[in-house]
Image (cartoon, rainbow, N blue to C red; front, side, top):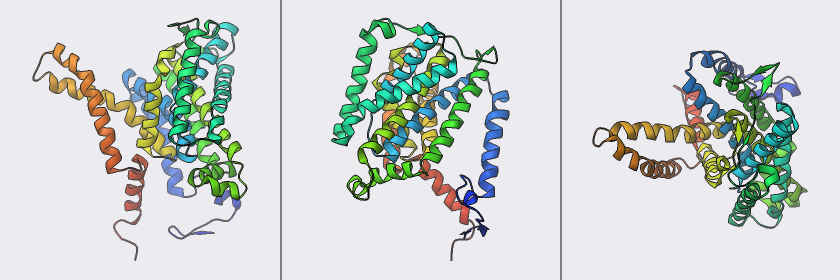
Length: 356
């Protein structure tokens, strides 16, 4: 098999199925890994490492949600609730039963996958807005359970504190240590997502998304495919919730409310539906945008009014600009940031000579 652009021959099945078949792609990935794991952690400040940690956790959750929404076409606004299931499962396992961090992560992800699969059952009969309302019900039900079932969370407003994870007897208390801890899981999540979308399961996801009736005619089990997508997405959400718990040192249901679910949905839409890279770009955009807006509004506002007045209107202006920028971006590029990146890539692929 020949790649016509590069004249690179594929001489084996392994080469044909390689995740990054071209030499330039492999070099680019190697450079990104070196920068992410070697250069950046040792030149970044504590504040920058903290932002990078939040972006890494958010990117993992966005990848999971994109498998469900972007690749399978099932709308969900209950992602935050599934994250809270993973967070509280890990917190209970580690604080009450002394389960190590790796067992708590597996337990949190598995419990979240089980709960997500249960709430995905209505997807067999309903879709679109009706499915979104169903997942909204999951958000409200899970929040109610965490508030009222005292065995799980201790009751309304209860917080379960957990110790930082320990690797080879070393507690990961610093932002630098947590950076490596988080980004190892992000790397595993990225590789898993890229590969599963190339398997028969991933192709079934896409077939259901594009035309579920036609997919069923050609022999795809629609119900099983949708539940598998819900399970995988919810497992990602559960692990994301566990990482938030270990990063902040506590599980708090207020950190996984409806607003968080909508933010993750915004990450997927802005980054690009069905794109792993788009999930990462969307997580970066949504995480950094409020911080940038706060900095800009604070600098400009202090030029015309005192600090108290700026603080009183800053939150409202942030929300207005946040929503306005998202609407503007979706109008300008509905396919997300990943499409913009593909446009740049396609331009430089033929620059300065167009195809004849």
